[in-house]
Every structure is written in structure tokens, then in C-alpha cells.
Length: 266
Image 1 (cartoon, rainbow, N blue to C red):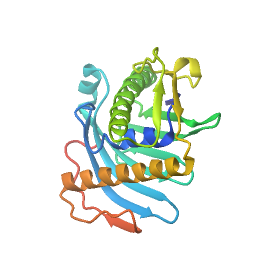
Image 2 (cartoon, rainbow, N blue to C red; image 1 turned 30 degrees about the vertical axis):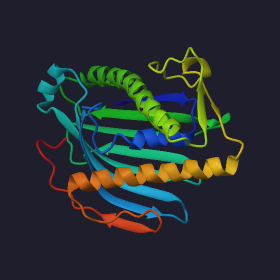
Image 3 (cartoon, rainbow, N blue to C red; image 1 turned 45 degrees about the vertical axis):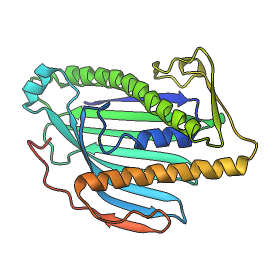
Image 4 (cartoon, rainbow, N blue to C red; image 1 turned 135 degrees about the vertical axis):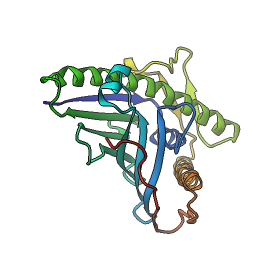
């Protein structure tokens, strides 16, 4: 038994902007109340390869009907996550899986942000979620799996709406700071829409005009991503009271002490 969902979405914006918006929400943000903890366990950065690998342990509210939470006897879940970012490939991959000690279910998610194959100024986001429940309640697990996966679709749409809120904040900040690129939006942009389709008709119509000094623009894009990554790591370290210095100008590897998991393990 078990099921999966694969959904995708096209941001008509450069990969760098989308990645900056994604990391700006961590470790915690009031706009995403279901995320209860996102503790870093290790960080590895190599400026020569432009690759960052971050291992985290996530604690989140269980996105399920209340009656189902009562059946399970728990109200949150733990996920182990590895995030790998390649500046050279312009690709961010996040692989998550449920606590290996769980005897109730196995859940996983693979999310990818990459340059759209049809337009270098767009970003293609693809996510696949899997869920498999252990046998219980006379084989009713298939019904519950289907219910939870439908909930996953709803959360996907909500997450894309929140993404655009973060993106709008970043683009406004960039414009205020007179960054080298400008974002030209049509009057009919609907940033609240989200779809499981990668077709252009199902996504906000946003075009990007780059400054003629292309090399300078690309360099600044890279610098802004690095600053966003450093901010993410520093905010997480501060929340976890970890004192290691974060300097993306040189290679570094940090193992971060993380306390024991709270509550019932899933």
C-alpha cells in the first residue's frame, strides 16, 4: 500500500530570487505557523564547487484532521531533511523523510528548484510526496492515505501563495536598494494562484528584464544568494545558541549539537 503525489509549479522569476525567498523563512516564521522547529544538525560549504549541504531536523504540526490526530495519539511529526544547493548548477534539492523509528507510517518528500528548461529567467519547482501507513483498522489505511494526500495538495497551493508573498517583499527591497535588475509585472498578475501544472497559463505572468551589464547582474545575483544563505545559517545558529562563525568566503564544516526530540516519536 501507500501513495504519492508529484506536483510542479513555474515561477516566472529567476532561480536566485526564488531561492532567496525560500531560505528567508527559516528557521521559523509567523507566516508558517505549522513549522514548530527547524534545527540545523550540520552544515558543509565549499566555495570552490559552490555547493552547500545542510542537514536539519524538522518538527511540524501534523497536517491532518483532528479526529485522525486523536487516532494516532500525536499532534506533530518529525522529519529529517538534507538540503543541497549548487550555485554552479543553479539547483536546490531538499530530501526529507520521517523519523526512522516510527512504527506508524513512513513519509518522504523530494523538492527541487531549478532553472526552467524553456526559459533561463524562470524557475521550475517540482515536489514529490510519499506516504505509507502501517496496517491498522482492518486495512482502512488506504482511505486515510488518500485523505492525507489530498491535504497535501491543499498545502501545496497555500505554500505557493506564501512563496509569492516572500518574493514580493524581496523584489521590493531590491528595488529600494537600486539593484541592477528590475522586475516588470503585468497588470493582471495573480500572485495568490497556485497550480499543480507547469504550464504558463496556470502561473502568474511575470517577465524579467535584465540590465545590459549581464555579467554584473549575474554576479550580483550570486552575491545576494550567498548573503541569503549566510543569513539563514546565522539566524538558525542564534536560535540554537550555536556560536560557530559563518564565513562563506572559505570552506567550512560545522556539526551542531541538537537536543533530544520532544514528545512522542513518529
